[in-house]
Image 1 (tube, rainbow, N blue to C red):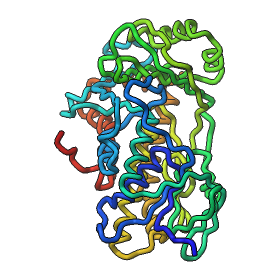
Image 2 (image 1 turned 30 degrees about the vertical axis):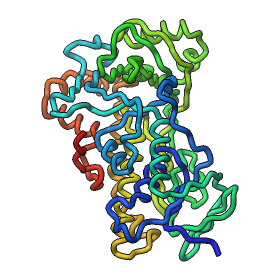
Image 3 (image 1 turned 180 degrees about the vertical axis):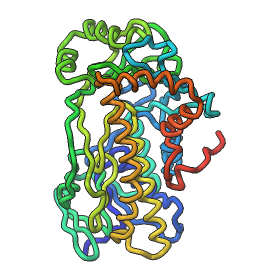
Image 4 (image 1 turned 180 degrees about the horizontal axis):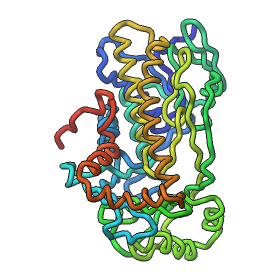
Length: 413
């Protein structure tokens, strides 16, 4: 007879691995009744060597995510993270250093930094290692399909069959779990392509994240630990096609122009990678014995760097509610528990998604009077301490309804 797990997480990216690690560690749970949890991930990455080149695919980790990663037991293993202390945001109609630009500084809000830039592969490897170290069961197999029963979900994989009281779908924007249970989405094409690469710059990045809004997209320079920067250039598709087809030298010249040489001249030190940008919102995050987290539930524009942070909070909220249910001896797949998770996270994600879409519409592409007012608003916000504190709290992930693990004070050292 097949063992019935408490939880099976499908997808071992950073969000799925975080949920699995939190469950395996029993964050907040009674140690005498740990969760029986397995994680389905066919391609486990290894932690890169300390002297390996920094991967241009990076994520910005907020304060709340830092605390969640501590709870998952992964934070201390994350190598080569680069704290950033400031953000400088400006529209193409003003110089980068001018009264019309917007600057957030950690010192102004009594924080040591505004977050960390971390390689995606390092984050994923640290979380998977933490999950295994906590006694979690890693299944190196592909998801094939599932069948929901009264007491459990039967999951067919490329290596056999598993059963669990609850299945967590963390398998990305094209989620096979979401499709298997018939959960529908709203999806729209931004008609933009994100280009990512690592660049060396003439001037130091000053532990600052630089972002310029332009009429044909958004360009960000994210500071890396080796003094280079990771760029994320969200360009309209026609422009992106040209940029990806140019030589490294020609691309650097276009980058210099697009950045207004805020960091001086640039030079590519990695290959360019790209991906199309779409917005996605699942109508429901949960079905009977199934919950969606991360990109399986929602995808937002990368201009604010909030995608992974939203997903990590999904994981933390769901685990907190599962822990509470365990204390009450309730089935982890109970729809009541999953609907509570859905209500909690849908409202928070909808707020952030709407704000990000407004920035893209009015700062990066707008041409009317509302857009001109929004562009001037960067300078207005810069002169208001209260408004800046509001935006910084959102960027840090310390505002809104947070799970307990994200509210924890950082431990000393």
